[in-house]
Image (tube, rainbow, N blue to C red; front, side, top):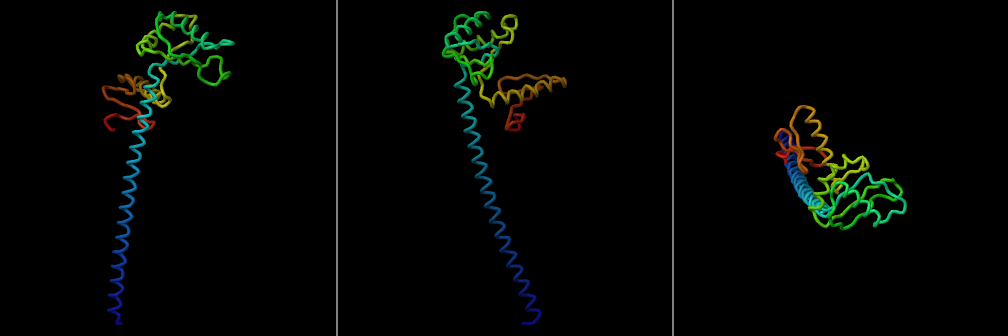
Amino acid sequence: MDLEGLAKLITDSKLELGSKIDSIAAGLQKKVQDLESAVGGVKKEVAALKKENLDLMTELRARNIIIHGVLESAGESPATLLKDISNILKEVNIISVQFDFVHRIGKPGSSTQRPIKLGLLKLTDKYKIIAAGKLLFTKPALSGIFFIDDLPKEIRQNRGLLRKEKSAAIVNGHSATIRGNVLTVNNKDYTVQDGAVVAMDTL
């Protein structure tokens, strides 16, 4: 084979090899895109299931209240605890409510003021108690006692982030309010996504 033929053979081989490499690369790229699409679909499904679970947990706790600051007496029982809670509620003018359950939460002996979970049969009773909670600050004998919603940990953490952002916005001279899981700053809404506060119009 002369030099010209050899040069042509080398050139053709290079072209063929380049074509094969391009074909393999295109195939790999397609597989990567398919995998990314599949992973994206799984992530969306997981996010949807997570939200569904969070919504269910929130609904199940909807009629519950967590009470902080009540000393745990020696020999305390559900009956005596219920009596103590009833007396506290009477001090803030809550008399006629229907209880479902009441118990301490947390490991026994871990604190002398373990929080109390109070379950109510009516959602309206819960709202009455939460609203009356502000009267606790006018009662010196009930100092340190307060009522809060029984929310899942993730929602508590998210609202903590929103409160932090709200405080920063107010310090910087902006108008800021929180309603549920939404922070509004200067008429723009924000929420928490994956542990970060984001503008809702970007979701």
